[in-house]
Amino acid sequence: MRVGVLTGGGDCPGLNAVIRAVVRKGVKDHGFEFLGFRDGWRGPLEGLTMPLGIEQCRGILPRGGTILGSSRTNPFAVEGGVERIRENLAAAGVDALVAIGGEDTLGVATKLADLGVAVVGVPKTIDNDLSGTDFTFGFDTAVNIATEAIDRLHTTAESHHRVLVVEVMGRHAGWIALHAGIAGGASAVLIPEAPFDIDAVCAHVETRFRSEYAPIIVVSEGAVPADGTGMTLVSGEKDAFGHVRLGGIGDRLAHEIEQRTGTEARAVVLGHVQRGGTPTAFDRWLATRFGLQAIDAVAEGDFGVMVALRGTDIVRVPLIEGTGELKLVSPKEYAEAQVFFG
Ligand code: F6P
Image (cartoon, rainbow, N blue to C red):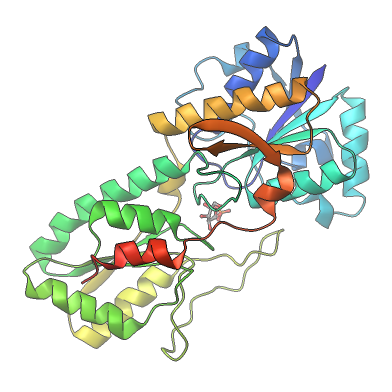
């Protein structure tokens, strides 16, 4: 059997670990051949391929990014896209696909599986917002990077008696902000799931200053002010999946806090630093186990599924379970963090 592998959407640490596990087990246990598709769905759409075998996977376990490249290409937004994918897979002699991606990439995989393409999904995203799995790989690395940044920012904020606002990734879900905010002892954590009240944020800032500490406010890029506070934050630019390009809430918030409290406030945007570099041991472990399970699914002809972590087990669930609905922070989980605000 010839198996195609692709990585789509925003990259994240651990992608290479999945590719390595898929190929190693696929060659050694199942006798498969592999073909790499470049740059997400653009690969099968435009016939962009690269050789993929054990040799290409040597040394990639600890490397961030993806040796296959990535893109946010959506074949369903391209006229005749699905037909072109079918033709290119047939021309390359590819019998099955392993698609490694988040909501958008696996959303495409779900639709292609419904149309009869033999595909197995592997969930990735630093945002950890895919349903059906307890965690996605990449998230733990991002949380550790954000936590280290918060730890460092505490000391400089205290030296200068200023507020530091840390903007982290998280378009729809505040998982990174929540976990890093709890781990880093933030004065407030603002997430997309719970529109914030700027007056309450300023009250937390003032409380923290009263005890000689400097406040650190952690905010997800997708966090929004509650109605009536008069803050706007989007650029209006959209990608191929219709997502608005976010960013800017950190600066807006710092400006607002400074105006309202009279204390200096600065913003630090962590941005793509959270997605780069070497994966944590947990992410390497999870990505590797996902890869092993995904290639077993291919070997068993179990298509239209996604691998997932449930407790400590790696299981398979229908692709739609992972892509149908986003996994968001619940009010109960958010309330746990709120105990430490102020
Ligand atoms: O989906 C992962 C993610 O890192 C989000 O947290 C973020 O909103 C988005 O990708 C940024 O995408 P890009 O790098 O394409 O701007």
